[in-house]
Amino acid sequence: MSYINNELINEIRKKNDIVEVISKYVELTKRGKNYFGVCPFHDDHSPSMSVSKEKQIYTCFSCGKTGNVFTFVSDYEHISYIEAVRLLAEKVGYNLGNIKNKKTNNQDYEIYENSVKFYQNNLYSSLGKNAIEYLQKRQIDKDTIKKFGIGLSIAKISLTDYLIGKKYNLDNLIKLGLTNEKANDIFVNRIMFPIYDLNGNPVAFSGRIYNTHDNSKYVNSKESDIFKKGKILYNYHLARSYLKKNDSIIIMEGFMDVIRASTVGIDNCIATMGTALTKEHIDILKKMSDNIILCFDGDEAGAKATNLAISLLEEYNISPKIVRLEDNLDPDEYILTKGKDAFLNKINNAINVIDYKMELLKNNRNLNDVEDISQYIGSSLKELAKIDDDIVVELTLKKLATNYDIAYQTLYDKLIKYKNDNVKPKIKKIKPQKEPVDKYQKASEYLINYMLIDEHVINMVENKVIYFPNDNIRYLANEIIYYYHKYGVIILADLISYLANNEPLLTTLRQIMSLHLKENYTEEEIEDYIYVVNEYPKNMRVNELNIKLKKEENPLEQAKILKEIMEIRGVKK
Ligand SMILES: [Zn+2]
Image (cartoon, rainbow, N blue to C red; front, side, top):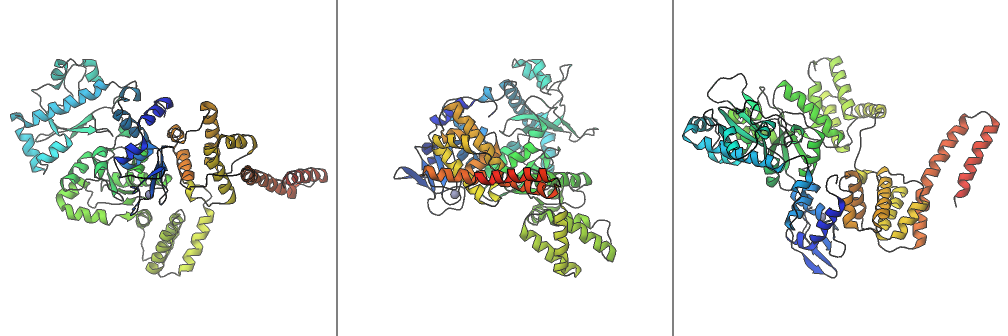
């Protein structure tokens, strides 16, 4: 956590007893030392989750979910770790509002809240009649107006005057994009759509013209301390409460698309507000759902945005499903003109990434022409070679074989060739659980497990382990050693907080915890694990030397290399 210090987080954790907190979500029964309940993170029928009051840790013996009180609330509520800290802090009387971001003034939020109410009052005043009629013509009913806080700016009634009357400072209103330098309102005679941050605070507006003609259909707030475009996901705060286990989340471009979808009862939509999908968005999305559907505008720009989003999501090993709307329509227009069922049909038939890419490859090709077919299949196999999911690969190959009447084996052989050509390694794979468990991995995991139980093992690892083969385990071991030297003790529940801003390491730690390795050990076992782990760098060095030996022609140098190899081997048992 970069902005709340660990001591404070630990203090908040101690005041939120894990048994009490989890009991509010899941019924717990005491059995022996621990409490048991039905795990909310998988389809559990018998109580598989155990909660330890002593360790302040929960762990599911079925799906392996484990962690401290903050990870539980974060996973259960689909919120970030820091939001979970904030939530639990508030429950025990801490206010982290000011700590989060010293630069932001809480008054900024207040000003926006007041502005939303002000614009809403305008809409329901006698001057708002035309606007209400306009909205109703566009099938935006009163419930929707209320739900999304829609309002109206009117030339005759100045927001700036109103806010200054409430003793807010003019400079602040200018800074927040509500007022211009001449102390006039930025938004005039527009239907006002508040833009909310992830916590549901209004932080900006988009104002749309109605019944008039203006060069700019929409006027949007400029960025401010509380409004950063790349961090906003419109409707996140509402969508997440509708999201149930295994639900998908639909990503759209504009807020109007999300509002429109909501009018027909589709509430699992969020919008990127016209900006490209960012890494920050993906961090948030990952917490919401694994099933992401991209439903951008049907035009050329929407197609480009779709392709960009796919590449970015793929870097995070997320394979979205894709919906493309015909006739250049955006989701708002599509639902209005073709109706809810037509739209739902689109969503339910969203296609996977490889099918989408292969469909794109057909463009500008004549698939009656042998040459074009050959090129098309070649490009498709190249795309397919990047896919890790064997089932998807096999199904797609079968489809290609049938559609173009080509032997499966021919396609398969060519695919393997392309796979071997793919030298470029994929960027950051943060999925330690998917790596094969070899003996080095197993020994490393046991060592980490015992480091968490006994400080003596920390000392042994620090002094004797040369190099953990797995990157994340190596960094994790270093963090545990560092943490131990700093605090003099390992409290697992606090170590989790300490690692919360380093997701790969936290994932590695939680993954090792979920293995439920045995707790008792002998000194000899630890020595054995260290021996196995240390074999890895030695073997790597011997391999290196053997290659060098083959290339070396000078007998004297050869002897030197051989000596080093013997020395390394000699150290081994
Ligand atoms: Zn579970």
